[in-house]
Length: 266
Image 1 (cartoon, rainbow, N blue to C red):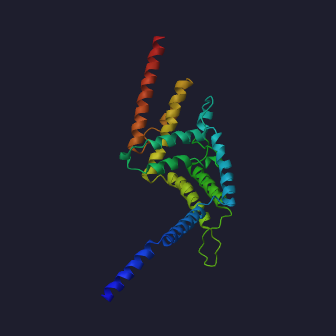
Image 2 (cartoon, rainbow, N blue to C red; image 1 turned 180 degrees about the vertical axis):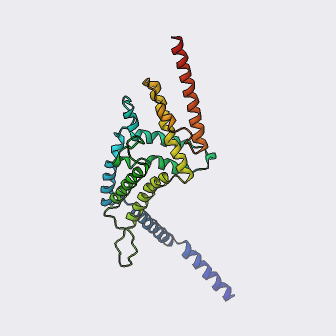
Image 3 (cartoon, rainbow, N blue to C red; image 1 turned 120 degrees about the vertical axis):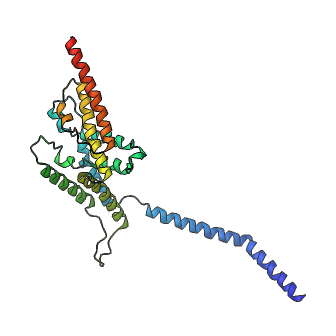
């Protein structure tokens, strides 16, 4: 009987201890402190850009701002009134990439990013066309050097990981910033190499936007711009690019035929 009584007493005290308000409040306070500590760690991890990153970023944005005002050379040489800029060309290509259907089996986000960076080098070397007397190899070399210059400027002054074990000055935020820079500028290299499905499609968008713009200038400014269509004919690599180009060629041919008939009747 004594053993039973002792067992009941122990159980009762255990229940009271576990349910005692002060114990519960202690647990709540401890839980709250843990949450606050976790929140502080998250806030520290989500800190703003470092001063060096901010300076590099602003310098980079100033450089590529030139693309908003850089007129596309082909249209200038064709004496187009108020020709488009390089940035506006990149913008419409980006819209094209957002309309890529799932059946295309390409990474749409990657295409979008590639459209936005594929002409960044022109902020330094300008818009070089096949008619400017610059060889294809020389053009690629100039643009690659320009991209590497942009990379160096964006990474200048950052504390990055090195293979030197004695170097303890690296900053994880700097490394994350550097990773973003490499991703962005490596997309330019991928575009230039023209090997991945995404690069091939973006190359097609680049050509298609040009002939679409040429067609619009022909209509809006009463121009005749056959060279832009001849230089891109049979150059499209993807089914999407070919279907867009074929439809535009058909529309243009029908328009020119109608114009010819109207001129004959006049």
